[in-house]
Image (tube, rainbow, N blue to C red; front, side, top):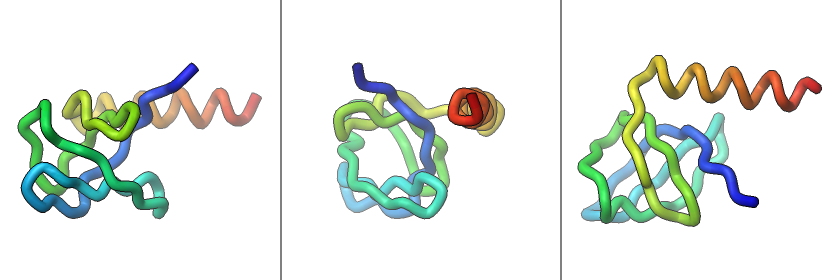
Length: 70
């Protein structure tokens, strides 16, 4: 099973993005959504699949934190 996790776009060069996950940076393709540096996004299988509001991103992050604590 794969899970999409929220991260923040810190670099964008064309459709190639660098996503920050609490200090861990990964590359992702931004080919299917309109996004910009600073956007909070969901990434699945190396592809940005959704731009999130800050509230949505925090809610998801908090849920992951709760699961990790279990």
